[in-house]
Image (cartoon, rainbow, N blue to C red; front, top):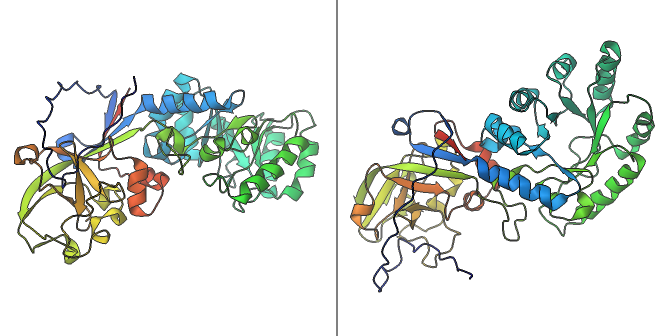
Length: 418
């Protein structure tokens, strides 16, 4: 039997005419396996990270790309979700290869996954060879200067550590030019050459019809032939969904593991990973004609009630998401259609539109049509989770889910759960 999902009633919709159903008893939430940051009552918000959902997303991608291997990109503190805990959970689930941006992140992953292969995407900084050897991690090399220093250290110390070669196939960011490939293709035919991976990076994978995708796939196909016998990797999160031509020997999902939609034009196949709740500090009656927030950008067109919530841009919630830009001065409601194009929070299970500007520590939501007893000081508003995705917040803010995740601040209480 297929059960259709029903969107929550908007707080500014008319109440239903029928008798509301009897509420089912609430089940207890899973107990967090670990926490960090301030106590819940000592800060404004609680950020919950579902490690089981991250593992489920990784397994889903891994199954999609068989027989290719599936690594995990955990840079930027695992997209804000906690690099040590995420890496440990993925290693336990069977992930054997990780990618990070910097050596400091590689140290964290090494502590969590002692046996894993770890690649450092942002190259081989001068003078860091001994550190790479100490923690047994592999640089992603994209210039002749990096290669010469890495190779000289291996020769001098007899270190057997490997490296990836990064070739630029059209992004023009990092990597060797394609014309520089032939000498390295000769190198991989030698004993103990040390090249463990040949890789490139897709620039437009989230736009499947972009012509650069086909150009990069073709260029990398030529590289694969030149380096046949050496493992290769091209696909990032979105690239995986372009099809088998991008899978090669290994894929490198990142944001998709953390619930960001890798196929923005279609349904998100990834499980949501984070929930962000913020405490309601105060519920205010706002007379008709009064304004809310900095700049007086929102004016109540009728007597209203507004919940003030204790999270703001100082906590990493995007200031650009605020309701000030979505409703003209004098408007009391952002939209009557129920569209998710307008910023809202879930309060008492209902969508409540954001009003006024987001400030450093606070934001406001219109709760006029919710029963007074359901919106009280000390209860919570859901800012991300349930009916609100990371990609929704990104859309409201004119950015991408990657940025929303990685900007979530350190003032929250963080809870990791299975």
